[in-house]
Image (cartoon, rainbow, N blue to C red):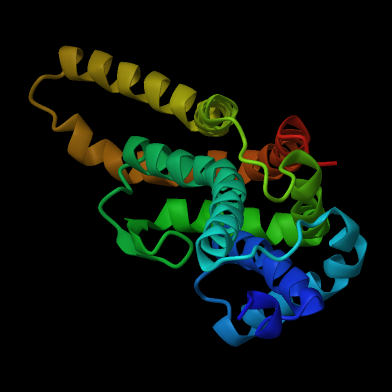
Length: 254
């Protein structure tokens, strides 16, 4: 008995689209965050898959004749979805790295709390920068670009065609490098301040060896660092908004 008797062609097309869309939404930031209700994410993935299926139906392969080919086709769609969602998640990881770097430079790295976006313990500043970054994405409607990018994956990765592993590795490497560069640029104002501050403390320590300058200066360092961060946060997130959109465009998503 053929698979067509158990799985109608129209239902197979919807299931195939849902495999990729569901995998993307499972990993992608904003929609795929662990603190978002799983039932909502599932319902949203089903809705988007239902909207995309009629548009993509003509370009989808027919139902395979055996289970082996079906599993390969479904597995490939899930892997592509996880890869695409992981690339976008990698862009957001730069905020986590920037927050960790800033926390280490401002003596705030000892304050740890659970990060719902990463599922691990991280510094308070890293959590703050990541959550504000998510808020900026929603406020600037970039989450709509993420949803549109899900449909663009079918233009970049046709169903049933295995993408070249070299291209995938190159895209992952470029995204990781750009995310790390963004983290360094994000933390640059605090890096410059910390360098100047510690140079000044070193000079004072040479002039007054008996004075415990690092112990006395720590409250001033934390206070001034918070002021510098607050003063630069608006400009930095305005730049991050453009960077996020450019990073999606660089990956081929319109």
